[in-house]
Image (cartoon, rainbow, N blue to C red; front, side):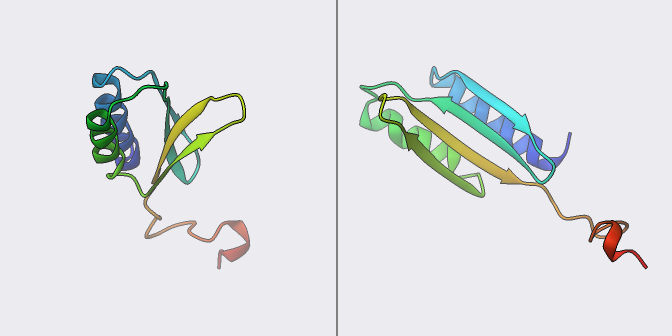
Length: 92
């Protein structure tokens, strides 16, 4: 598993330990973690949530008009140092 997957799994584990159902998805350039955030989360729990997602490269909270709130975090994958870095059009 790439380092981004390990970091994302660690974030997901911390959120799961707080009682949130998490989803982890691998993408070509990053790994995402999502968790549904119910109403009534205590200030202490929010602090722990923020501590967990602070390990990510980006994170945020998506709130919809249906009162659904989804916490998301993105961990970027490392850029390859050799080989096909720029894709087929950049090969020599």
